[in-house]
Length: 366
Image 1 (cartoon, rainbow, N blue to C red):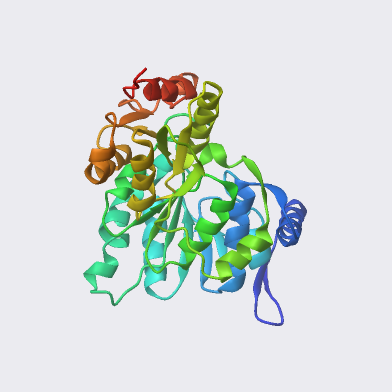
Image 2: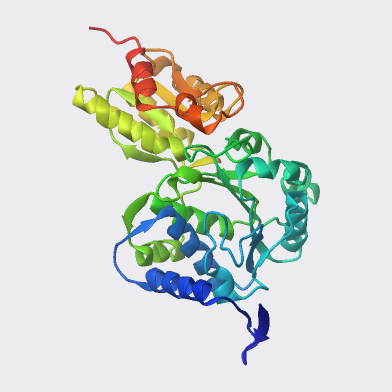
């Protein structure tokens, strides 16, 4: 690969014909008007591309994100369009990736880095906790930390050890970090744009099994929404209205909760589904308003139940809506064991049947 400089000073890279073709196709899709059937992967890709076009300080780097376009092809075409000065591959050293991003963020850049797989991020955990999360506080607000750490996480793809894990609780527990996790294609775009705009560090948790989920999305409308300053931060969404009980979920568990609600409807039971969207900051108002209305709740998450985000959600709802509860809050989570092998994964992950069993256990009166 060779690097050239154009007349206007933009650095570009000569890449393979296949990569260039993919980039051209991606750009054409992004520029199409009106609703399109696109994947979450495409929405995330479009969000990064639009952010890079809008702000020259935004750059993307990590393991295999350049020429390959990332293991999940989320960064496909970015190197071809923006050059290897703004989208580039790094050595296989997560701690070094985060450490370099910290230095760049301190000096006015807006790095968007990829950890490739959830459990690959653990070697960088010290950097994230000691420096990314604390720099703003340590300098009494003098230094900002506009850094996005993209983490493909959770199960559903049959990944082997270190390739599937639910690590969101580590980051949610760390003061100084925002934690986002989109569950829909449209939120993939809007939430990543917001994360890149933020002057605070964001752990952007991307559900791997939802990368290939599709929906009809108008990217032009989402761009206009972003330009108008509309924000999802700290705002949960009512994914499905209901009256009998509330299913509270986030990220990869939202589609499962919706499927359970659809199944319950066939049995005459109306379940409301809340998509939390941002774990930090957390939307107590929307979540608790739903529980006060229905009087019953089930929290659903793929992560281990012990000392988890699901535990925190139960505590917050109990503290704020105790007198409205007709039954104890139930949880449907991953089991308190290391993430299992691919053949056993379906036993570990929350399922429609497990959710409906929990709903049936909410002390209904005949």
